[in-house]
Length: 209
Image 1: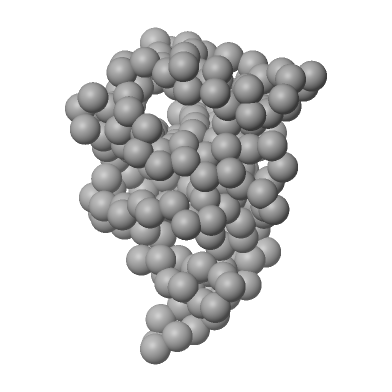
Image 2: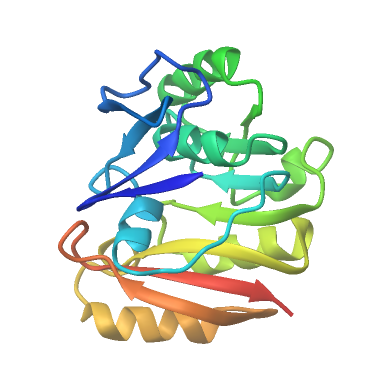
């Protein structure tokens, strides 16, 4: 459950009494919520900018670039009866995500490289939702591979397009337009620029055809 709290949004804490990254815990009507920081989560930033996304409590999610699990922890609050498969190749932050999964049983660590989905094809099932937050120049190709391999027909994908990671010299608007042209097998449902939370970022919500 996502709660609107004035200028903030928050998720009902799956593990009451425990913060994940120093976020504020608040109580409302006998329930505890974790304030979701849009400066530390592209998904939160997109929601704050007006993106409409109705999460299913039993969704299966593939998270590409999960890092230490800041955003994934909020998704685990919302997707309580499903599972979030978090993929990352960086050992240090991945260790933090593994520790977090010990507290949050709907988080599944997958040590791997999103460029090579064949490396985790035996672990990750077909999913309802993909989140991609990777700083790579071939972001579109990474998304295309994983959508083709894992996303159910009609499933959704959220991608944070990072213009400066794709081409530091190009106009961000041109980078975003080129990125959209490179997408395969999906249609764009919504798009939001993420300023002032993230500079030169575009959030896209996609649906698999």
